[in-house]
Image (cartoon, rainbow, N blue to C red; front, side, top):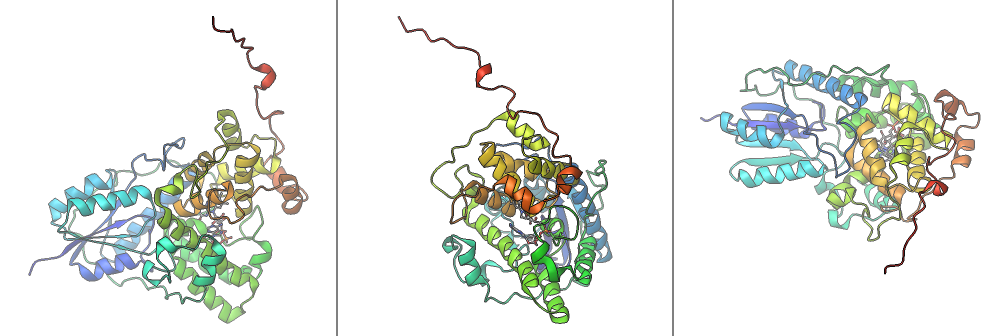
Length: 442
Ligand SMILES: Cc1cc2nc3c(=O)[nH]c(=O)nc-3n(C[C@H](O)[C@H](O)[C@H](O)COP(=O)(O)OP(=O)(O)OC[C@H]3O[C@@H](n4cnc5c(N)ncnc54)[C@H](O)[C@@H]3O)c2cc1C
């Protein structure tokens, strides 16, 4: 009898627990290659971020991959990490090991989808399966076709809320062995983050999940969730969720256990509510494809913003006339994380006060955020730029009022030195422009 050799391509699902694709690959193959490809320097659009990944993102990813490799070893497997792009390495592996099945988790990334389409086209005899593991529901569970995705979150929530979420699937006891010989990893990060807030890896994510619900903070989440600084005001599930070290269904299961033991209230409901926002953006990104990165988003009219290099640079560095924005940006640059309230304020400032093209702000956050998630990042930016799923079509925050509300004693601004900035936003104002005299054509 011939052996079935399979390949499982890890992406943003760096876990064993509740990984439906991995479980299916394990059940259907005799030998399995577990592969992770380091992405080529590929920006989401033509707006190239300053470097590939911020130190925070890079270190978190490295930790998550190392942890995954360790967990795989316990199950008789190991992780092959390739520096070559997936489209180069996968054909080599197919020929070398006679691979018959290829599996991967579903991904909203535009380039990941192109890769998948190309592989299917080149290898018609291979079975390809993509399995949803980043979301609470898979496509078949949704009561609408993706093309009929409700155009606002409220409408989406109304149809989604009655659905039952499947329980998280326990990790497999064993995996089929790998036919590939051991090879050194092509990349070990030698960068280190100064006092990192989060440590990557599945076990770290699960430990954080338990710690969060043991702390009782879930019962006051709704009152504290708009905080700006510290670990306790919100769940901080996002870094592990975005990298797939934690599954959204595992979180819901822990939330339901908590509600049974400690009581359900508005706050516990609100954690679920926020996870539905995440779900909405995942569907939204699948639905709209590359329009997620387009200047006019899902609307037909382009915003009236532009690109001013000096303003952009000042925003990135936290050197604008808006102390609350400066504090948030400095927090992001030194930790790789920013609160949800902070993200709303800096994005609103970017578009409305500085008049900048929203895609540059989204690209900067893609580079910096430790919890960067394609759908959540670009979807939220579109929403705030007025080109997304916001029925009001326009969100401009009054930064003075927001400061009074969320940082009344300026503790956050002082901590992150938000008051220090250049006196003027633009170093060249209208009076400094060279005088140009126009001559009448002869
Ligand atoms: C401009 C902008 C960019 C953003 N970029 C990202 C991103 O790249 N990755 C990311 O995970 N989130 C992003 N968000 C959403 C949100 O800010 C973060 O999910 C949240 O701050 C993470 O911290 P937390 O886990 O403590 O959140 P909590 O408040 O504890 O929420 C629990 C979980 O719900 C989900 N969630 C909460 N708010 C949102 C939201 N508005 N949209 C989607 N999911 C949400 C997240 O998975 C989060 O972990 C962005 C928001 C804005 C306004």
